[in-house]
Image (cartoon, rainbow, N blue to C red; front, side, top):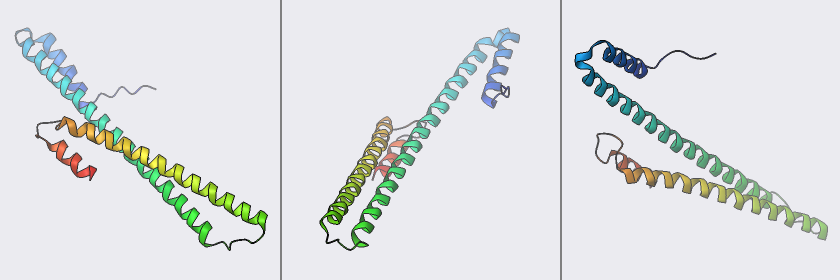
Length: 148
Protein backbone atom coordinates (compact mmCIF):
# COMPACT_ATOMS: atom_id res chain seq x y z
CA UNK A 1 0.00 0.00 0.00
CA UNK A 2 1.65 3.21 -1.15
CA UNK A 3 1.68 6.30 1.04
CA UNK A 4 0.29 9.21 -1.02
CA UNK A 5 0.84 11.81 1.69
CA UNK A 6 3.17 14.57 0.50
CA UNK A 7 5.68 16.34 2.68
CA UNK A 8 5.23 20.09 3.20
CA UNK A 9 8.18 20.79 0.91
CA UNK A 10 6.77 18.55 -1.82
CA UNK A 11 3.43 20.32 -1.44
CA UNK A 12 5.16 23.72 -1.84
CA UNK A 13 6.94 22.45 -4.94
CA UNK A 14 3.63 21.24 -6.36
CA UNK A 15 2.02 24.61 -5.63
CA UNK A 16 4.96 26.42 -7.24
CA UNK A 17 4.62 24.26 -10.35
CA UNK A 18 0.91 25.00 -10.47
CA UNK A 19 1.53 28.75 -10.14
CA UNK A 20 4.10 28.61 -12.92
CA UNK A 21 1.56 26.96 -15.17
CA UNK A 22 -1.25 29.41 -14.40
CA UNK A 23 0.55 32.76 -14.07
CA UNK A 24 2.71 33.27 -17.11
CA UNK A 25 4.00 36.80 -16.35
CA UNK A 26 5.77 35.70 -13.15
CA UNK A 27 6.79 32.23 -14.28
CA UNK A 28 10.53 32.99 -13.99
CA UNK A 29 10.15 34.07 -10.34
CA UNK A 30 8.23 30.95 -9.43
CA UNK A 31 10.65 28.73 -11.30
CA UNK A 32 13.57 30.26 -9.41
CA UNK A 33 11.72 29.81 -6.13
CA UNK A 34 10.96 26.18 -6.91
CA UNK A 35 14.58 25.54 -7.87
CA UNK A 36 15.85 27.17 -4.69
CA UNK A 37 13.39 25.21 -2.57
CA UNK A 38 14.41 21.99 -4.31
CA UNK A 39 18.10 22.65 -3.56
CA UNK A 40 17.31 23.43 0.08
CA UNK A 41 15.31 20.20 0.40
CA UNK A 42 18.17 18.23 -1.14
CA UNK A 43 20.64 19.84 1.30
CA UNK A 44 18.42 19.02 4.26
CA UNK A 45 18.18 15.38 3.18
CA UNK A 46 21.93 15.23 2.66
CA UNK A 47 22.60 16.64 6.13
CA UNK A 48 20.15 14.21 7.72
CA UNK A 49 21.82 11.28 5.93
CA UNK A 50 25.23 12.43 7.17
CA UNK A 51 23.92 12.68 10.74
CA UNK A 52 22.46 9.17 10.40
CA UNK A 53 25.83 7.82 9.25
CA UNK A 54 27.59 9.45 12.21
CA UNK A 55 25.01 8.11 14.66
CA UNK A 56 25.26 4.62 13.14
CA UNK A 57 29.07 4.71 13.46
CA UNK A 58 28.75 5.95 17.04
CA UNK A 59 26.37 3.11 17.97
CA UNK A 60 28.66 0.61 16.26
CA UNK A 61 31.67 1.91 18.21
CA UNK A 62 29.89 1.79 21.56
CA UNK A 63 28.55 -1.70 20.84
CA UNK A 64 32.05 -2.95 20.02
CA UNK A 65 33.50 -1.20 23.07
CA UNK A 66 30.90 -2.87 25.30
CA UNK A 67 31.79 -6.25 23.76
CA UNK A 68 35.42 -5.56 24.64
CA UNK A 69 34.57 -4.70 28.26
CA UNK A 70 32.42 -7.83 28.53
CA UNK A 71 35.30 -9.99 27.24
CA UNK A 72 37.69 -8.28 29.62
CA UNK A 73 35.38 -9.02 32.56
CA UNK A 74 35.10 -12.63 31.41
CA UNK A 75 38.87 -13.04 31.21
CA UNK A 76 39.38 -11.36 34.57
CA UNK A 77 36.77 -13.60 36.20
CA UNK A 78 38.39 -16.67 34.69
CA UNK A 79 41.78 -15.68 36.09
CA UNK A 80 40.61 -14.68 39.57
CA UNK A 81 37.76 -17.08 40.34
CA UNK A 82 39.61 -20.28 39.47
CA UNK A 83 42.08 -22.19 41.54
CA UNK A 84 45.03 -23.06 39.34
CA UNK A 85 44.84 -26.79 38.75
CA UNK A 86 47.64 -29.19 39.57
CA UNK A 87 47.01 -32.02 37.10
CA UNK A 88 48.66 -31.65 33.68
CA UNK A 89 45.47 -32.07 31.61
CA UNK A 90 43.60 -29.61 33.82
CA UNK A 91 46.45 -27.10 33.52
CA UNK A 92 46.42 -27.51 29.71
CA UNK A 93 42.65 -26.97 29.61
CA UNK A 94 42.95 -23.94 31.89
CA UNK A 95 45.70 -22.41 29.72
CA UNK A 96 43.72 -23.14 26.56
CA UNK A 97 40.69 -21.40 28.04
CA UNK A 98 42.78 -18.40 29.06
CA UNK A 99 44.37 -18.27 25.60
CA UNK A 100 40.94 -18.39 23.89
CA UNK A 101 39.55 -15.69 26.17
CA UNK A 102 42.61 -13.53 25.54
CA UNK A 103 42.23 -13.98 21.78
CA UNK A 104 38.52 -13.06 21.99
CA UNK A 105 39.44 -10.00 24.08
CA UNK A 106 42.00 -8.85 21.51
CA UNK A 107 39.59 -9.44 18.63
CA UNK A 108 36.90 -7.40 20.36
CA UNK A 109 39.44 -4.65 21.03
CA UNK A 110 40.37 -4.63 17.34
CA UNK A 111 36.68 -4.32 16.41
CA UNK A 112 36.22 -1.40 18.81
CA UNK A 113 39.34 0.33 17.48
CA UNK A 114 38.23 -0.10 13.86
CA UNK A 115 34.75 1.23 14.65
CA UNK A 116 36.29 4.17 16.53
CA UNK A 117 38.61 4.94 13.63
CA UNK A 118 35.66 4.88 11.21
CA UNK A 119 33.76 7.30 13.43
CA UNK A 120 36.78 9.62 13.76
CA UNK A 121 37.34 9.47 10.00
CA UNK A 122 33.77 10.57 9.32
CA UNK A 123 34.08 13.35 11.92
CA UNK A 124 37.36 14.57 10.37
CA UNK A 125 35.71 14.54 6.94
CA UNK A 126 32.81 16.56 8.31
CA UNK A 127 35.17 18.94 10.14
CA UNK A 128 37.06 19.60 6.92
CA UNK A 129 33.85 20.98 5.41
CA UNK A 130 33.69 23.56 8.20
CA UNK A 131 30.03 24.40 7.77
CA UNK A 132 26.85 22.96 6.36
CA UNK A 133 24.72 26.04 6.80
CA UNK A 134 24.97 29.80 7.26
CA UNK A 135 26.86 29.56 10.58
CA UNK A 136 30.58 29.83 9.79
CA UNK A 137 32.72 27.05 11.25
CA UNK A 138 29.83 25.79 13.41
CA UNK A 139 30.40 22.19 12.33
CA UNK A 140 34.19 22.41 12.63
CA UNK A 141 34.07 23.55 16.26
CA UNK A 142 31.48 20.90 17.15
CA UNK A 143 33.52 18.18 15.46
CA UNK A 144 36.69 19.28 17.22
CA UNK A 145 34.90 19.10 20.57
CA UNK A 146 33.59 15.64 19.67
CA UNK A 147 36.96 14.25 18.64
CA UNK A 148 38.67 15.01 21.95
